[in-house]
Image 1 (cartoon, rainbow, N blue to C red):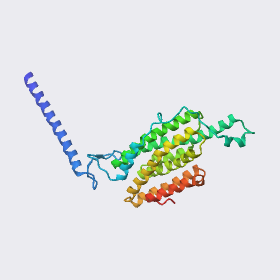
Image 2 (image 1 turned 90 degrees about the vertical axis):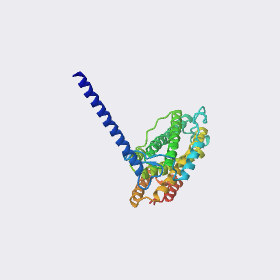
Image 3 (image 1 turned 30 degrees about the horizontal axis):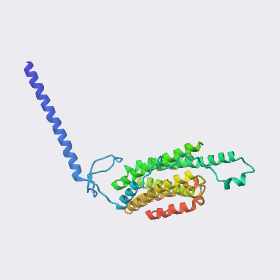
Image 4 (image 1 turned 120 degrees about the vertical axis):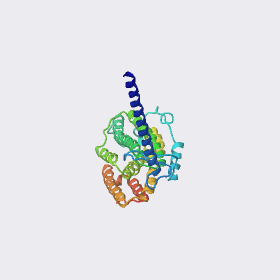
Length: 307
C-alpha cells in the first residue's frame, strides 16, 4: 500500500510538471506571436506588447526617426557642468548696486535697503525654484509618453539638467537666507500641465511656456543683476535652457505634422489658456514683451495658432 501511494504521488507530480511546462510554452508562443505582429504600421526594431497606456514602447535595436534630436542629445552630453566645482559659492551675494541705492540713501539705511532687495529677490527666485522642480517632474513624466528613442534620450538629459537647476536655485536661496511663498496662480498653472494626459499639452506647457518665460527672466538677470554670483549662474543655466526649448519646437513640429485636427484643436485651446494664465501671472504680456513674442513665434513654428 505505501508503494502504490508513492507511485501515485510521483505520477501526480509528473503530470503537474508537464502541465506547468505546457503553460510556460503556451505563454511564450503567445509572446512571440505578439512580437511578430508588431504595432500596426510601426514595427521596425520594436518589441510589441499588449500594454497598459502608460507602459513605454520597447525597442529591439536602436531606431532613430529624428536625427536632429540625436544631435541635440550629443550637445547635452558635451555641455554638462557641475554646480559644485564650476561655481564659486564662497562669494557673498550682492543684492543691490550703489547706483540703485543712492536715490534712497537719505531716507533708508543701507541695511534696510539690502533687506528689502533680498526679500524681493527671494520672492522671484522661489517661483523659479518651484518652476525648475516642475520641469524636473514633467521631464520624467514625458519619458513614458514619447515613443521615440531619441526623444527619450533628450528628455533623460533634461532630467539631469533640471536636477542641476533645482540644486543651483536651492543653494542660491539658502545663501540668500530669506523665505518666500510659492505664488498660488503659478502653482495652479503647473498642476494643470502636470495633470494633463496629452504629451502635446505637457511639452507646450513646459518647453514653450515655463522654459520660455524663465529664459526671459534669466537673460534680464544675466545682464542687469549687480550680483556676480547670480550672473555666473544665469550664464550656465541659460546654456541648458536653449536646448530644452529647441527640443520642444523640433519634437512637436515633427509630431504635429501628422496630428489629427482634434489633437491640434485641443493643444491650441490649451495654448490660449496658458497665454491668459501666464499673462495674468506676469501682470500682462508687456512686462516681458519680447519673451511673449518669442513664445508666439515658437508656437507658429510648431504649427499652432497662438490666438
